Image (cartoon, rainbow, N blue to C red; front, top):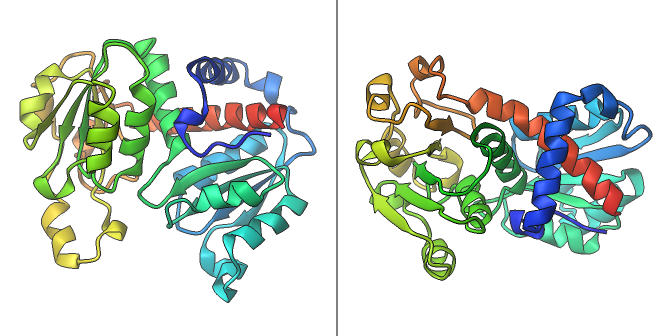
Length: 304
């Protein structure tokens, strides 16, 4: 039995197989309409989510399975003090596979150690968000036809942005990858990412504060929101939240074939006027999230 805690839990070959399966699901959805008939997915979400939770549910329903679970800690026995370990032991009696989101880093790993069913980390605090990374990778793989020799700009909240951390982990395994890290001083990438991941693996990267300075070189621009829920001080959040706003004017500096990705939800870091630009693929990205989660559910159940 296998779990998914990090994108690195999948080898390069396994990831290629997963993305190929997701592409086939996109092209031939009827072939998979009954693939999980009689199977149940538990969604254990201890913090709010729209896209991740609903895309997991849509994925399982598209496969002919069913869904049970909770959408906040307040509507579960966590409100009574039940531990994650106890919850997953109980959930293992009811479901065949589980997706868990939790505000504390490492909570999904704790669950996986006590679970008798496959566990998928659907986001643990500011740590990892592997299924968003799989979504990002499928988007890039489908629209850029691979991962090699790309310059990727990561913009916004690089300190707390778990989607950014997971994406860096996943992409360093491919040749010719370069990163441009765009953030204010207060939201720079954590030291462990800079030192233990990028420098240790000799991945070229630059750190900039101005988005305009990075734009002409980028093949991918990955925008993120400044996450209010990660700030302890309201004043710090208010000061940071409008630091980057992508507009049509700024896009005049970009390549014609650059892709704009965003894990969503968007607040105001991408102007709505950008939505109609053919380079803006963040809503397609959300659709790819359903396909890749369908592929992941099928793969983990097969490995069980």
